[in-house]
Length: 346
Image 1 (cartoon, rainbow, N blue to C red):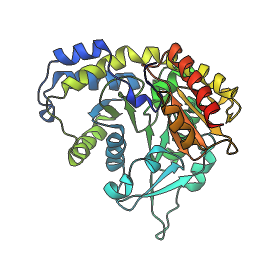
Image 2: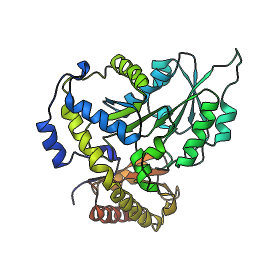
Image 3: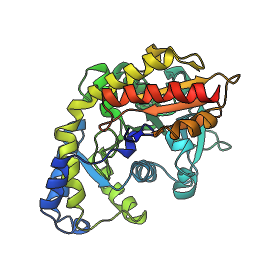
Image 4: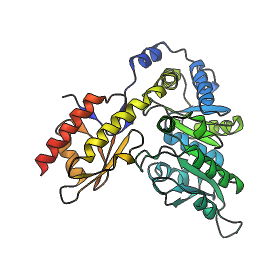
């Protein structure tokens, strides 16, 4: 059996069409704004998410941090859901790079409520940091790929804007969110002041993310990208794959969701694991391990001997992510391997 990698959709490899496009890409110096393939990608991306302008960046983390730098002033406070990627997995970038304090709020399935945000925004008091930015995440990684609806997104935006607070959407997997709800992605990005989305996860491009917003905002992000070392030269080689990701790969994400649903149904029937398949919304399957049996790391070490890779979120919780290189046959093989690993540990 070939190795089955369910650690993340970041492990996807580019499609044959992407490889051909990369080899044939027309390029120029992007720092001078002269790479035609980069420019085409940015125009396409801005149109896709319904914003005026867009900027290609090497990674989602750089995209999020550049947006925070452009939106905020030093000493301000950023509101985030307590399990958000920006708070947990970006190395304290908001404090280090932007000089901002982060204030986390407990969400339900990764979702904040409008009343939470309204109450959390600081009043005009010299003792408090000013609230400068609200960050949302869609889909929510740590919560297991849960989605924000257009209605809730708009309500949160309205509350923030009423208080004079900008809104940034970490939409690393926002195309998964639009697919899961069978809506245009523009419905999920409408109203936010900026959005970041990844080309290198479920969309299968090898490198890169895009940030989008107003033309003036993207001008500020261009400066922030330069400060972060993200100015690239003949990067059209990378952008060529991103164009195909936006034109073709967004339309196949439902396949990943279907394989995730099949995986979730099988896991739910296995005795040591606890999972409600109805809690699986997109391509992320997160489930708990009965501590009376074994820990998540113990199980994953045994599973790896059967050439199936996955990640643990904490001691008793496992995350598996479906993607372009994982088909129905691979899911069947992975489930068989899980049964064998469970029996061996028991």
